[in-house]
Length: 253
Length: 253
Image (tube, rainbow over all chains, first blue to last red; front, side, top):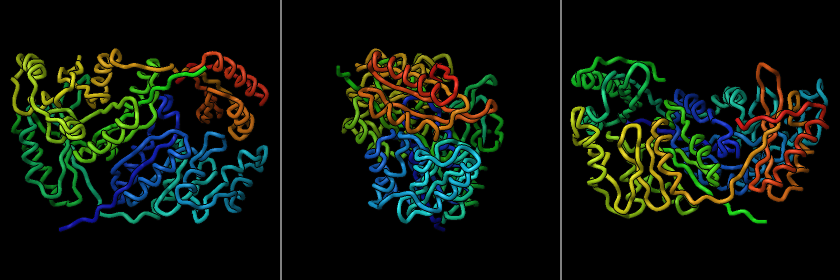
């Protein structure tokens, strides 16, 4: 049985992510949003607010994967360079677009109006379709297989609501996590590798944890094949038990 | 006056980061560790536990920047592929090394011994120097300009203690952050861009915030030149005041 794999990349754009000022949380949110649609993240990059660098990364990633999601750099200030960089990457023109302008005009009507800076957020590359922003209105856009989203996490989550219906996913990779309290990775590595070698369509991961409750390992199996995953689950439970610990199945964290 | 810029990249390695299982915090920790040493992060990538993919990213990034830091994939299980991939990237051999083996042997003496899986953590590429691990002993290593660190955040922080003295930094880029409560980006974008255009060695960033206290903007100036940064600080304070808000200087968050 074969499973169609659909892969995506994420490009996180912003000096503040590289300076350490801002802790990114969008990568994880996008990964968790895509998984049930049958799309796996295969790579992510973080780049600065530099047009050439953004354009180069957009072209590298959109050619390599089925989808690319960018975050950040589409606001009204001079350091928001993503829309122009994406247009440059595709070799298309960019200008203020009427539908985007109307959205912003309506939004700022009740405030102090649509000035030149805010109008920057209506600059949309030729051929793109808008992505609705239910939080602060200024739209994102889709150009080819590239989805250009905001950087603010609540806006990213809002925009993803207008992205899901555009995605053609493949097989959905599901996950099982078995917790072994008191286990150490070095004790189960050989048995786990034997499982990995024997498995056709399952990948296994091992993640040690340390907290106030002690130490242990989370063993994770991932597969698009429900039957193979069910067997992997039984195998992991048996492995933990054979190592002298009580296995506990947990929700993926 | 010119300032020597030293740039680094980070390569975060692990399926768990791309599946959304794990929230990375190492990128930010490394950025904050490097900044006072005079090293700026210029790019980061996140890749899966796939040897070819890791090796390709290592070679792309170590050639492009002064330093490369990798996290993850140096534990005892089959999904820990970083050490071998880094050796492959450099075209050098890798094998169990005596000094690393002794560290592990001493550590596991009081437990249940050094088995084959744990011995994997003593595999060190030829020509590398060890990086001490004060948390769980299994060392990281430095090969050329590449620092190979663990994935567990507390271990990363511990290993960085043995990294700082190996870094030749350049000019230290310092940051000033001015908070303008009630301000919106669209109101200050033009004045901020004017500052950016006039500045020689300062970059400005604008970051909107929304929380229970309301809305506002954090305006950030970054520069290796203390005099230019002091002027930028005054300019940002004046800009916020001119927009009708009370400026507040805050510690970089």
